[in-house]
Image (tube, rainbow, N blue to C red; front, side, top):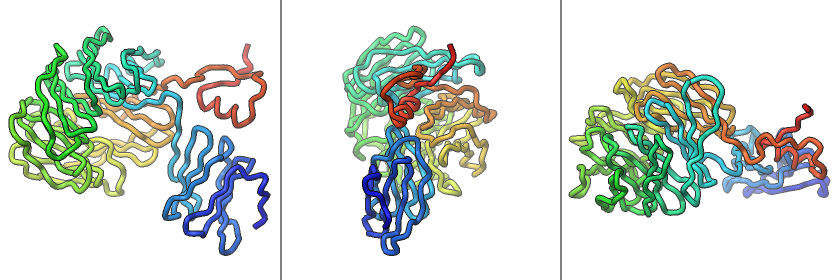
Length: 416
């Protein structure tokens, strides 16, 4: 094959021996078919040199790495499938306050940021930082009365913040990756990467009870609106239901084939909905444990979350690439298609009353939507490490380095 070996930043052969992929100095990538020694296709030039090339084990996918961006390609056709962007302090989790007045984001730089969303339109104001943890934020929850924020961090602490004053009132020494307030906002349930579930009194920050989940590590957690049940979704696809406060082994609901990652309960507290990595949403009678129905996206789109809306319907938030769809699962009817992001959706969070939705994308943006109207109300963008820094006239920067700094917020401005 006619290849200039000195001009190749990266090269790789597929595990099945059928393809050779090589990057070039013009930031493009060419893939050859080895048996015929003919080029199959060239990937379009990227924003920076491609230093990393990796085929999947079955040779069906190719990954290219260029500075802060990874791209996934169909190895046979060269079609782009997904794009992943990294930044210094990305959003790791998010939560909306009741009725969507404020958005809370957790970041890898140890900070929480509180974004005012009222009025719902107009220029974005600077978020208020909440500082108290020493490592990355892992999970967030807002109490139904809007008075409390709970934050779990990698420093093995859970912070309880008084939302009106933005003051950390209690710092709990516990490991957690899931948090859930009781409907009356008096109790907080937490669990981490062990089967232990803990219950805390919010006002005092004192532990009230703890118990082990027989199914193992929890993957979703909630307390029912009537404070009668504590429910966990589990990695083995089961659902555990304890009476409140827990005094005996849980009842177990079975039906999902894979991990249950999202739970919701009707406002009356009698119907439970669950979303699973098996691609289905199921709803159950909480009293009897009977399965009442199953829904699956017609095109197999990713199910991020299931919620209960103000009309007492269960709604699934799904996405394919940058497009978000809102489905009424019991009617099998699409409510809204939310468009505006330019990259893949990685996280969503609904307000406690189900009226607003926040979506986070790999285009650095967070969008806040009205679920009653399907309209985007706000577009938020956390500052990147070099946001607004003018690098005009900076010497010694290569084209790739300039592109990288721009992706991190730098600008080239010729204005005075």
